[in-house]
Image 1: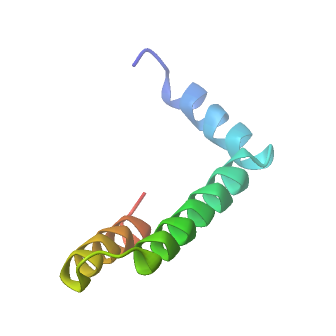
Image 2: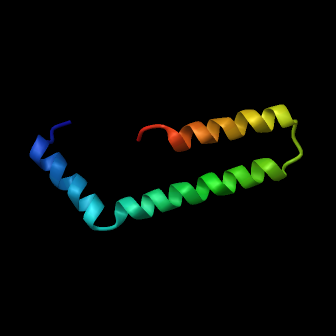
Length: 64
């Protein structure tokens, strides 16, 4: 909360240039895929599967 706009921009650039953003994005996508696979392969009601898969899709597509 106490960062200036300049400091926040510097941290954002550091996050991007260090590869941390790519790593976090790749990890997030890996976990989305694993979650979807586990939901598809579990023995739960298809309606519940659809809801869970829809929620994951929402999380994937939302503006971050």
